[in-house]
Image (cartoon, rainbow, N blue to C red; front, side):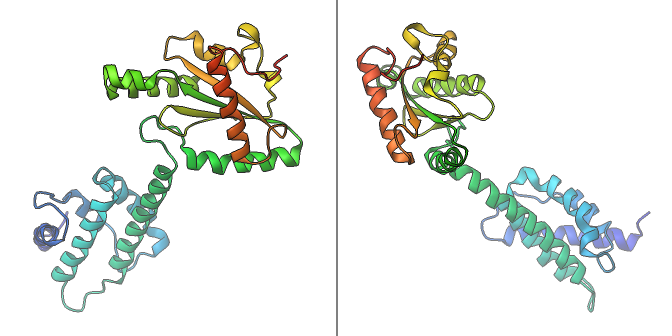
Length: 279
């Protein structure tokens, strides 16, 4: 059982923490810290515990502060540090506490950096990877195909009539068509394949170890099987074009231009297949 002195210290520490939070720039006045976090902090003997022994308690704090978001959590920890320094008896050894808070902040900052990195290569609407990630992955896949001697196929897909949908039904309806196609791509692709949204109505599939001929098997006039699987389910129509490494190019830009060119010809022929042989 905690002593009365412990309870009084805890009450005063929490009061000062709340005051300090209100004083921290950018923290809303109504943003009250989680009082139960003090139980986690006060349960650790911060004067004797070693940094490597703090991991479990650090994890508990991270778990409880997770819903705040890293930015708010870091500001609350800054406020907590100020509150502890104000409440601590003269001569108290706070080295362990500062190490503890530093470990928590490092974990939060690391998760923030990782999240920002992921957001930088993710399309916010469809949650597919974006053009930046496509170029990174495509360079890697081209290098792998060069080493292994295996083919690599790209498929560029454009959603049909997206502008008309946006103009007549609103952008929310257009967004639903994009998300629907992204979901169908996820459900259709093989393990190892990858889908990207690279523009307003444009998607790209990267299909390692695949020649255009290997895509045949389902549609009319040699239409690739992946296209047939996508069109078997209700959803927005689309046009498509293929390019293959190394026949159509040995770098991302050249391959994408070749696939775009075939997509245009496919669209002009009312979604009939490109001149690429698929048998």
